[in-house]
Length: 247
Length: 350
Image (cartoon, rainbow over all chains, first blue to last red):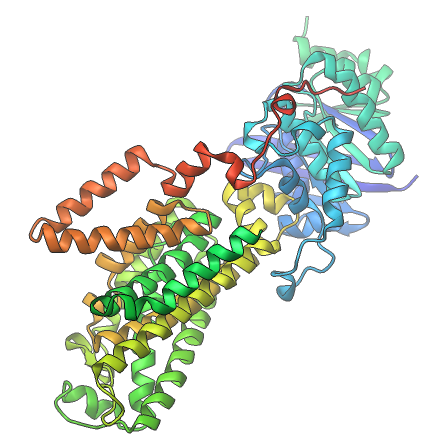
């Protein structure tokens, strides 16, 4: 299996804060990979580095063998590498359908397509995807009126609307009703299997990440401390120490 | 649908008949259409895109100067015209006048649009307050700048070409300008109505609601922001060119780069009507103009106090403007029909 995303020796400092130090990781095409670690361990910083929110200090990030660490955010997104946010970001005053319609990749994207009409078929696609995440009945509501958990689902649907090759999910189940969590795990596996989207998931809910991921990376204080299959991570002493404190 | 067409036709008929129905208010109604254009175009940034700009007045003044300068400069030496302060009588023949007028008007739209693209490229990367303050500075700077250029009359300003002799009286003049203003307003409205129905409109709204998200979804937001400003500058520039001709005299700070009056008015009108809606700025501009003229007539001396009080009332009781208030009250009239069952429905993933 070839890696679709490869992060090599990435460093990111914010002044004296060592957010990421010498992080190397590979995500294989078509896999589901987990990223765990205690709060403040640099998971979201790593996400931000990958999608181009801020420049990295050292190292290289390659997406499909293309160096992306120097590209601006929209360009990376257009390559098919999308992320969702920990604090949901949706277009609050637009209704769900419009949120979806604007998330689709336009057929043409140049100066002359600024005033292009939005194809009607997109509305059907949007409704199907909203149905997929269980939001069909909420489709006409303003996105800002949805609850936090519903917004998380909407954000996932918006990302799918864009048909990415790889999706970085920042805590997809945070704030979601426990009864829905199994549904989300099921959906994410479908996204991976049926849509063929590679997933890199930050998650604090161990039950979720253990049943979802094939491989897990664990960060602590900005460094990669362990990687491997869920079973291995579960029993890794360094991981347990990082989460619970050394005994 | 049919109802809508009838409404549009009625408004159109009113616009066409107005100079005959209210002959005494021709100039006032012309200015009202100009105000509608200003408020509609301000709303592209301030309402739809969420970028509060105080700089659109810059394009207004620019258009005003460019239009008149070309009208004069195409046929006479501009420097002599401005140096004489309107005393020296170069007289346009009717052909010269109309040729100059239309060429000037087109350039008054195109040049500000180009300026908007260049400046926009530089400053549309700023967000929120920073953008607002920057554009405020631009508007003021433009006025000071124009006040320093001898060719266009520097601080004392310049006159725009008078109505040519031998083709009718001042009545014809005000009717002519009335219809041009009305046409500009209709065209601006129709253009924006169409533009908002395309990807452009949705992207502007997306930028307003969450620009970071829009970027993260692969939208080149800068391209849309610049396009939006170019569109605004185009129509505002043309409105400026018209205004300069109508009032006949261009003064750099009071009429052209009039940040204190028109520059503030365009913001107030859009807010009064309801920002981020198509009809809001139109209704806002008309209501504002009526209030303003009323205050100037009945509360002379206290007009600005009355205007200030109006603004306070609007901000406190109608923060979303007239249209926003109506939308909250009658959402079904705005196509927001939401089934109560749907609203209450539990989200389930089976």
